[in-house]
Length: 119
Length: 113
Image (cartoon, rainbow over all chains, first blue to last red; front, side, top):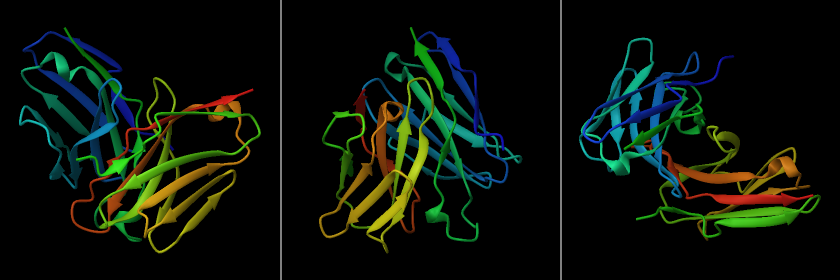
């Protein structure tokens, strides 16, 4: 079973530019989560998509946005990049909201992340 | 507001001994808890979970204990191995509503050979 894949592995942008990060979930998973891990900090919840809809978002400004495609892959867009956006961005997938067995008991499976550097 | 706290940023343990990683939470609505292990340059790997209807869950060398009254969970690794050296994150999720998994800040475990 292929795991969660993220691309690119590394991304270098300058302040003010836009960044697009991509994620392919595990086959059969319909929920995709995005997390930010800044240096020395824990995982901060960014966005949750399920069945193509944004279900929840964390405490981040609107310039962080994304979408989920019909094949359940997802992209995260960060507009007007700032230096403090430099971080590891992790995508995770899980069984979806309507899955049998209870969505709340479905662990997240993470990709290896995209390291975004803003200069 | 840090709803999930890992107050020990680091822990060193001798190989073969027990490693105990702790996690506290503040939100009584949390009812599903997970532990993840993270190596550098990799994403977190799911280790073990526990729901609030249990107070213990075991998987090989890993055991998670949940004390709901104290809002505390711990991960025991016995025996500890050098390959267990990593950052460990606990995470919590409510039974319904947002399904937003909240992560702690992590504890760096170093197992000394």
